[in-house]
Image (tube, rainbow, N blue to C red; front, top):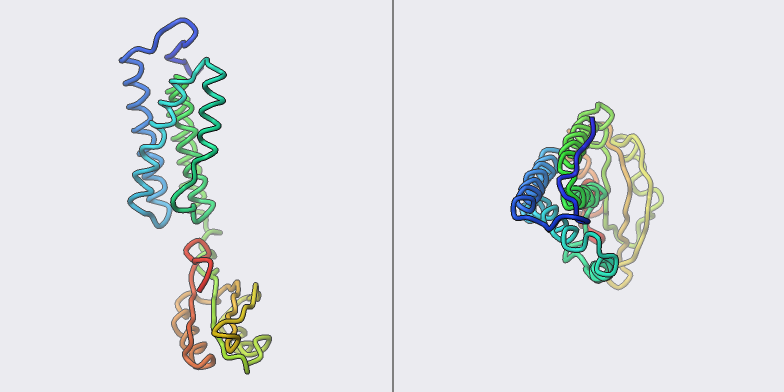
Length: 225
């Protein structure tokens, strides 16, 4: 069994029928990619729409430049100037973008059957990976950002609380704020019990004088406090 190519740019002109088949396949498979992204974690409507439409855009470019090396190089150069308005927040986002581009390249070159196969196969792999039991520990792994007064020793101020509530913790960085009168600490932590997160944060609030505390998953955290 082989995956047939419905296009032959060396001998045939691009027909409306072939263009319609490839574009429809791009939109359908792009939507499958977007649904896969939606079902395996948090999502953003604008990003989902972009994932659904991107394969059709890439497919159109591939069709227009197929067989013309000079034009292909020019298009690649133009793409290098493009920047995302919002930087992808995680490896999951970047992977989904490349997934959409792979679909577009496959359909644009006429390999609609292979595009459908790789889409179904990769979606199945993604769903399987996100449903593995090992992934449940991810819910307990967080980034913790805490502000404390300068008179507190950040090396040991939370040691007893960390021992009670955390499996492990690592101080990633320290920076001063408010004209040097406060420290902002960032930790990688793993909770013993995700249901105790509020209790843990309340204990931290009592220790740091009710200053700012932020606790969340790595892919949802902003760069600064």
